[in-house]
Length: 387
Image (cartoon, rainbow, N blue to C red; front, side, top):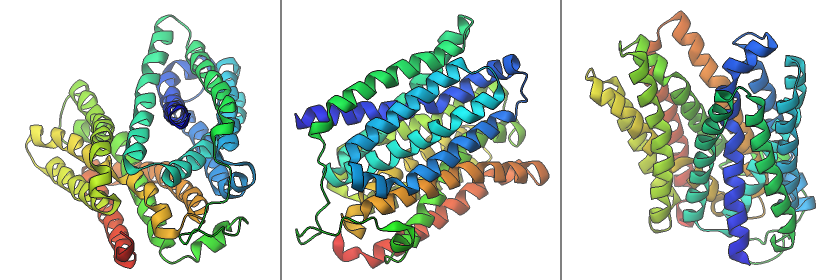
């Protein structure tokens, strides 16, 4: 039955990725129907991000009270309802209102599942689970394009909503399998089940370093994916079709890299893989800077491969670095810092690109990669005896 629960969690990670690409895929059609501007999608995305930040920060209190299983099930139910609402929306204002429960649900799933897997499963499962997120994020554009080709983008949201509803039923059925208990401390004794809180978490030695590192990583990942094609078109003179095709290599690198990382995670350990991934990322950025087109385009794949182990390994190392009793609170704050980085830094680079030059793209990415590496190395030096 334990393996059945793991299968449910794998499905939940696929489900977590499914909605992430829907808005971007459907917006060119949706905005025409609603008479909205091209940039209004950013408003909806910001509302979603705000909801995810709030629910991530509340995850410690909710999970300690209700358990990871129930929080996950209710959160997926909220996203399913919100996606159904998107399929029935009649105005941009309705989209904004529906984005609130969607963001709250997505953040709840992310924080609860990531910490649960970090506590109860090995590093290889953490990597493969995040690979499943990539599978979900890759599938949803095809679902939406299939529905748009048949004249109705609403069916794309409705299809993913139905998939989420089915998963919700499985999650509620699996609740007896989830271990609802206070996480024991390292010496095996029961710990205080009271929520740690943001202030309490930030007082723990090393937490600010990992929050900055996670913020930097998510800022880097979001900026890389959003501006890759534009950089190659505007700064390198590559045609639009080629640039768009090679930009997808970044996400391919992340997905394939996490699949590969699962086979070596338990042997090499989180600390080594975070360092290795950071150095590979920097190597990819150097390739992007080179004047030869083939090297620059291939550099995106290398950056993706470097990104692959960092996110899951940082999450998986939380119970080891900060204690099992503190990990849920810290993971929740980490998720919030991740959403801040991925929400605000890519638009910031857009301002730089528009007012200075998009040619700063690889240097901007390198700055965040170096910041992330510096913070994780500082943390590793503090906790080297625990690895």
